[in-house]
Image (tube, rainbow, N blue to C red):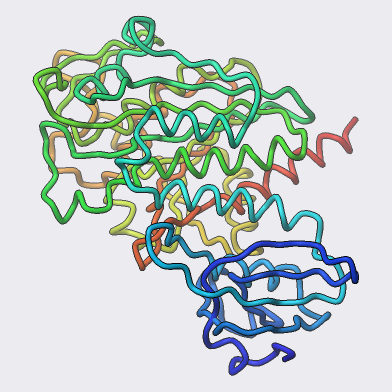
Amino acid sequence: MIVKSEEDFKRLPETGHLKYKPDKLYELSANLTVFTSPEKEGLTRLSKFPKLPHSSYHIDPSTSSLSLLSILLGQYSYKPYAEPSPPITFSLSSPPPPSLSPLLTSIFASKTLINSPPNLLNPTIFTAITSNLLPGPWKEIVGPELSLKFKATSAVGSASLHQPRILKYRHVGEGPLFTIIGKSVTFDSGGLSLKPSDSMINMKKDMGGGAIATGLCMLLKASNFNFELILPVVENMINGEAYRLGDVIEHDNGLTTEVLNTDAEGRLILSDALCWAEGGDGYVIDFATLTGAARVALGVEVGMYFTDDDELGERIYRKGLEVKDPVWRMPLYEGYEKRLKGKISDLTNVTRDGGLGGAITAALYLKNFVPEKKKWVHFDVNGMDEHGMGEANGLRACWEVIKEIVKEEKNRK
């Protein structure tokens, strides 16, 4: 069957893999659909694809690379604890682009981490999995050293049975240094500012920033780009050791924060990660499922981002449009900074006025910890799609920007 029209891809399969066949046909087994043009199909996001039934299909040679990518992204499925659906087979008369496999691997890894149940992805297990996804020299700060140097991460994770920790992976490669940071709260109860059940049900996704950051760094390593990955990893739980409203936390850069809401924990652990970033020129990109305000403003399909670098901000927006990974820039409005000033500390982790402009004030809070000379981008993403499944918002847009920056630096030399 040649897949060309809408009628040819009304239903798609459940699981799949890419393999090479000796007869020189390249076979994609499952998780696929095909179209000739994203614009023609009216798609704004590549993963919004239906599923084909179990069968065998041939992908037309004229299918674009972006269309081929959408075939796989739209068909990702996470059902390890249910009976698997039968696969389908797509054959290609020529090999797929060499960039396809690492891109899919990184995105699927991100989505699978987000989808994993919190009892099977606590901070200890998360650390082990990320170490497998990125083999090599990791530095882990945990225990007494964490409580001395990174007090925010230590405080947020103090009530969990699983020790909080902060991880760093460093790879020396081509291009400027990209510091990639991901909020990694493997489950967020809200702490003493306890979430209601309907707000807590999807909080396994609160490590979505760490999942996206890890997936992006898998691509950076595969391309031998220069980067460091920093992941503050915690569970935000409740017991007699839990951090409290009114606590004051000292940060590694000398600032202090009064805790007004223990459910605004993500910005606290990100402050530690930002303080641990290498100094000097380069880029800092952080990903976080940080605020409900971002979801209210843009919904679940559009990733929100902040930067005070207009040229970089425009690049990200443009690349997001090109690769159908929609993102939208929001303002770092300096007029709101005064709302984060503490009465007994330098900062508060939320404002005292009911959270108006909450995504903006969260970003402004983080800005206090960004190292000098760095070009900084903060992504506040939902981490789940409209079906409650993992989504790597912003990953592909950032990847395209990073490739462009590295290429430009090479051309200048």
